[in-house]
Length: 130
Image 1 (cartoon, rainbow, N blue to C red):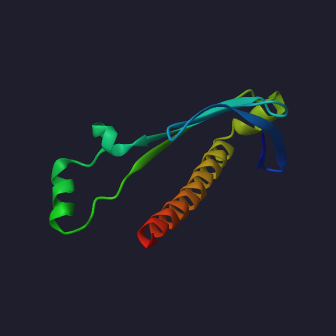
Image 2: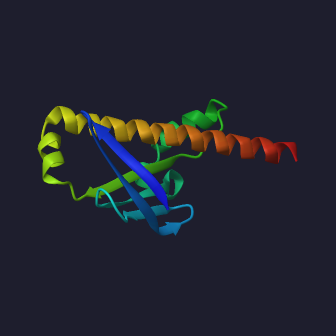
């Protein structure tokens, strides 16, 4: 179980959530148990396994030719569905608030990325030292 909150323009809502599906390392899905009704999922796709998301072959060849190692790339997708109470829906109808919520979620994903990269680098250093 985890506790989450969302604050915007002086209105804060929170909820407790539980994971409904964890498929390592591909999916984490959840649903709220109380507070703001919501559910969602974060998916992780290896860009090498999804050719449409990979760089064009010429870019990959140029990077390899330049002596740079190809680094793994993961696409992260966040999907959230909220059952928003009417008083919050009225606030969210504003484009500015919608953009704020979107920017907040994007900032959260960027912070998550930083944490994951730090962990990946630590594991790589530990393996190299072993």
